[in-house]
Length: 383
Image (tube, rainbow, N blue to C red; front, side, top):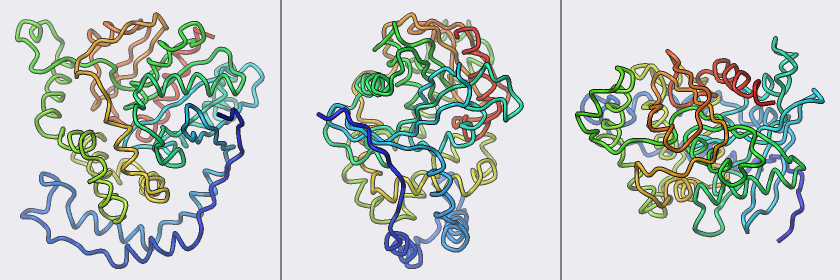
């Protein structure tokens, strides 16, 4: 295994973009189901509008330029190609911070917080809050794809992240993430508790098995009860995609890898369910170009299957309680996300908990200022 770190630049051949355009032009659309609303999946009328924008107005080359404005690299860790952004702060006392995305996200999630976190002085903040950022693509996702072998559990990913930080010369560092990143980041603390300064997550890390016993439910606050209700609704109404991705990812991959519209619909279904407020379509909450750039990272490297395989083919039971690393942990609980402190405290040393009155599952995309403020505040006392 080589420890070499290679510079990386995104340079998508024009023929790949021409192929995408041709596929979009030739989309075979299904007939809309009765009502054509979100109850049966992504509405045909809404998706047609998104695809028309993708065909005629979206500019991949502009997105490529924005991504390439940040230093990018690849390295091989544990037999897997890992792509990452490494953005150093101009502040000499900056803290190294590892940011981990989730599914159906990518490194694109963090583009709007890179500047404020690395250079707070230029964004109206205190320069003492500056971070050096390391933002890897999860194994099997985007330019870290395809996945080379099985077994990429959150603990194995965490061990790879610790090795990555070692190669970059960072002895002490923080970790932050949401979704899969909220599962990986505490594991980074468990893998190297003597090196991780603190762990910050948006969303919960440990969840109850449902239904929750009535006696326990009676002791909960209204907000906690609402989180339990949404967990129950998720398990009853939304768990199907995990069942498919964790059991038949290869079968799913044929459709998603061959049809850009099919892939976009698969991803957008979750952006609609998990953004806040739910009745508002996701492109009214998150910029359309951001949504499409995120989808492009799945399309261009043909990684929807390996991303699904790594993202949800994880061992362990829902509600399992991992060991507490003792690393100081902060949680930002956005309004439409699920986080219940009493359960997170079973496996984490919670030193900061913020209940927000807005935002959904995609904190960095929906509420970048709120997330930036909470990350700064959490790590301020740990520097």
